[in-house]
Structures are given as structure tokens and as C-alpha cells.
Image (tube, rainbow, N blue to C red; front, side, top):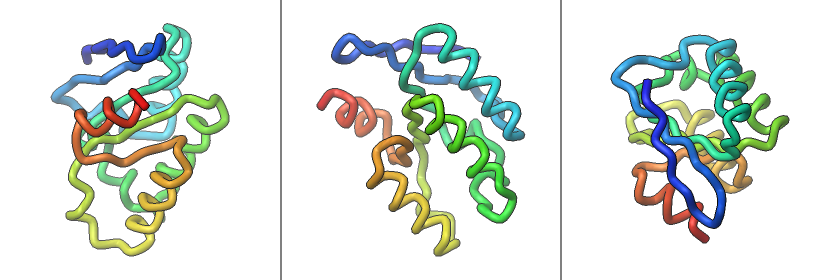
Length: 119
């Protein structure tokens, strides 16, 4: 796993770069949050491919557990990927509401992430 730092408006943003699945359990999500928060990152970008597919099945509860921790610690998280392949209405609604609230984002590209954070 590599951490690429983007600095926008005096804020360091961690972009997680890896070919491997980084978050397999809610504990993995909490570990990532803790490690990056300790390093001074308030915003984290991770790719869909680095998160277990169980995360995107809301019935498992993994997404809720992980995202609650990010919200509690006020660390903004962006998950980058193509979410159109998921057919679950509840997941689509969850993504829509998350994007509207502004703490957790699901966006299609890194460019959109950097644009959003530069505002």
C-alpha cells in the first residue's frame, strides 16, 4: 500500500494506492482511519477495488460500521469507483444521501474528488 499526499487549501489528503484489498473487515477500516488520522490526514481517498465487496452489500453492516467511525472522527472519506454496476436500490439511495451530506462521498474519478475538495 502506498499513500500519495495531495495538498489543497493547506489540507493534506491521503490517496490510498494499492492493487490489493485493503479493507476486508470493519476493523481494517478502523485501522486505516486511525493510522492516517495519526499521520495528520483529515481526508482520505480509497478506491472501490480496495474494499471488500461485502461493504457494498448493506445487509452485512460493514459499510455502516466503517462510515460511522469516519463520521465520528470527522475524517472525510471518498470512495472512487463505478457504482453503477450495483443494482441494490438501498445502496443507490445510501450513495445519494452520503454524497448529499458531505462527510462521505462516492465519486467516479480522482479528478472529481480533487475538484470537490478544492472548493
